[in-house]
Each structure stands twice: as structure tokens, then as C-alpha cells.
Length: 447
Image (cartoon, rainbow, N blue to C red; front, side, top):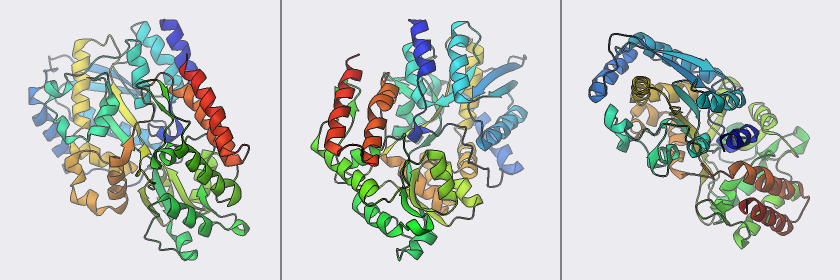
């Protein structure tokens, strides 16, 4: 069983495009000022005070923790600064040695390391990975984290917390959270006669704006819709869905989904508001070059847009007849099974440090990721930051899309991505494409 699971894990594309919020954002550049010395000292003091109830790891001997993560972009540089500061300021005689590697490399190394007892003391990876590791009994249950550290879990948004749980047990401490947001180019809005300060709020407005913003003569498009993406936010907005992982049920074959796919095909095939057969990285480049009017993506776009001098706005995904939703993603700190108790408690200390508002605020301000601490959401600096305020508000519409479902990757690769590609390319009528996808879904779910 272990070998079968490792093989499946190695072959799966574990990071879904819409959830790609856990490191390795190569188009991201660091911006913003680092926390000043006074702020760092205060964060350390707060951490020490808050941790008075935590188990004492300072036994006179230094505890060295091995820490693996997948933050290969500039976000990794910022994370290293924070870890280095923790190493300098903590009074628990803890030193963290951090090893950064691409996600596919980590997913190749970690299962084998856990199996042979050579795993790092704690790991940072995407929340979509938690359930597969739990199913193989490869992660420590850390449900005692709140009691041991005294961290107030009620101060964390519930939809953020639930991404680190499996079957009611906590297996990860939240590190960052993201959904997909709607970016718009204010200069292109002005040129098209649209209000540059007003994003579309509905699917109808999105389509209307996209047509007005499209200008083939300038290689300018109203809405970038890359391939190899599952546009669940559109299906959900009109009351549709793909599947129910709790009951292993196929939900594709519905009138709601047909109508949504007809709307999507009209935009891409008839109105041609999006570049044809464009990849995600190509769409990122066009967005930062000022050729895209609107684009749905994660917070990793923010620093790149700022660096290119693009006057942009950011808003939650648009609503349909059933409301507005967005696939949620993020990262959590997890502890591999078999980590010795003293090292587990030492890792708790760093997780506790991370969950202080000072550190969460620094991470959001420097990386552009939303805040999800309730007290931080009320912070005047966060509320006064147009971008952070907008994306933090958008976290409230985050919705899990097959997170923790063992068939998630296969559903995307065999069913959903082909469905959207056929519809958006015009290769099949929406109803025919949906019928074919529904049959494929049945085959996947029957396994």
C-alpha cells in the first residue's frame, strides 16, 4: 500500500493551477519595507509572552530543526529573513535550518524520507497535499497545538482553518491562504469608456466589459482565460458543480452547467475576448505588459504589476445567480510522522511565532497575500491599503474544490480541464462536451 501511494503521489500534479499559492512564483518580486528593529523586538516579546503555557523546549541543549519548503521565488527570500530573525531572537535555544526545493522535488523526496525515518522536523507545502499524506499515516496529528501554545484559534477565519483539517483532526498550522481574484487594468478601462474604479460585479458585467476592452488591432484582450485551468468559480456562481467528494457523486450533468458553459463559449469563440490557447505564464506576461483588461489569478500577480507600473485594481470574483465563489488554496506547516516529541514542540514554537499579527502582517505587506487573522483584518494599515483590503475581503468567498479528495488530480486531468478546453476552443458544443465529461467523471469515480 505504501509503495502504491508513493507512486500515485509522484505521478499526480499536486498543485492545481488555481491553488498555486505555495511558493515558486517566479513572476513575483519582493516589495515593501522590512519590519523595523522595534517591530521585530516587539514580535519576539509578544511571542515569548504568548508562549508561556507552551511546553518548555529550552533544556540547555540547542534544538536544531530541519525545515523543508517549496518557496523557490522571492517569497522564499522573505521567508528566510523571517526564519533568520527567529533564530536570532528566540529564547528557546531553537535553530531552524531551512531547505528550499521545487514542489515536484519535495514530493519525490518526502514520502521516502518519512518511510525511512529521515524526514525533516517540519514541512511547508500546499494544503492540497495534506489529506494524501494523512491517508498514508505520514503526518502527525497536531490537534493539541492550540492548547499547548495558547494561540487563539477563534481569531483565524474558519474557512482558513478547515483547510488544515482531515476528519476533524488538525494536521497543519495555517501559513498563508489565497483565492482567485479579479484584476483589472484601470488605464484600459479608461480607454474603453469604463469607470476605472469600478470592477464588474456580475458575470453579465464581466462579459460586457470584456467585449468593450478587446481590441485585436492592438493585440489587446478584455479577459485572459488560460488553458489547463478549471473555472469552478463560474460553475459555482450559477449554482452548478463538478462533484461531491463526500458522497463520491457526479454533479456535472445539470442545466446550470450547460448555461454557464454556453456563456463561456460565447465569450471565447464568438466574441473572442481572450487570446486563443494561451498558457498561464503567457497570460501573466501579457497582463504585466498592459495587454489584458481583466484576469483572474492569485495574489502573486500584485508585486509584478507594481514593478511594471501597471495601474490596476483587484476585486473578488464576479457573482452569478447563486452568488460569488472562488476556489481556495494556501499552505500549512505540517510535521512528518515520527518526529521526536521535543522537536515537535520546538516546531510548535515557530508555528506560534508565525501566527502573531506582526509576522502575518509583514508577510502580507511584503508578498501581497491576504490577511486572515480577524484582529489583523481590523488593522488600520491593512484597511487603508486598497489592495490588501480588497483581497482580504475576498477570502470570505473561498470555497474548497476537492481539497483532500484522493481523486482530485485525476478529476482535473481526465475530466474538468478537457471539458473547459473543448468548450473554450469551440471543439464541441457545450452540451456535447458536458455529456462526454460526465461519462469520464463516472469512470473516475467508479475506481
